Length: 98
Length: 111
Length: 123
Image 1: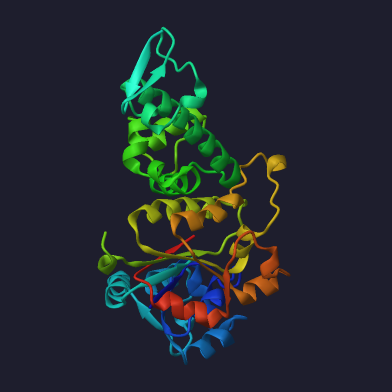
Image 2: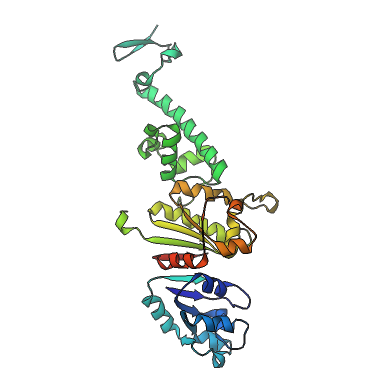
């Protein structure tokens, strides 16, 4: 299953809820959720730990817009808009953690 | 005195066709003429409208036709719990028309 | 629609009832989708569990109290209501505080149910 998160994990619990409920699958971080993909935050440890269970990717244009593309956590991938579409297509279902 | 004949039995009525002796009323009489059927429909219309008001009071929504049909069947008897019967009572649609009469808002999902 | 073509629809509710329109909108979509004879389930996670809190009185905020409508879902053959145990506990609630009968599940079991769905709609 593809899990899409679009809220900053520093402000909202969307990513935390996703990590608590979901057991496995792919997590795509978009919009403000890309702050969860970077080093040095209070959620970095939780995201690193989650890499054991999940494939985690962040949307490149959102990283670029926020000037944080140079500090993505090792193991977290990036995709462009076409990659976003591919992810949706290759998963059977998807849940948006608003 | 005028009378009506139903299944070989005679029932006394007044000039307008109303039964004189209420105790003689039965299903056969009720179904014997279009006029009787209309009266019976009116009574049931009242039952359905009352039912809708109670339903709304309890759940804060007007029920979908499928739900109304099922619930009417349960509370007013299975012969009344068919969409065909409800459409006879409310030719413009049980949900829209009956809800309007009952003073309820348009049912959710009703376009 | 025949049994074989029914899809599994899950409605994920994660917001409290009156601060935003999500809860009411979710409920309306659930009622509409019930007309299509699909396999519908509802889950309540995080503040979404507050939607089911008994005793809501909305006169003072001049808003419609739609919490009684959750009790109508059974009549719509929507009988799969799941609540995240951790969310319930985190808000000082128990099953007895809820307006309808629900199945309380640990987080990961909810996640497994979510995986099985054909369509997941989030509110």
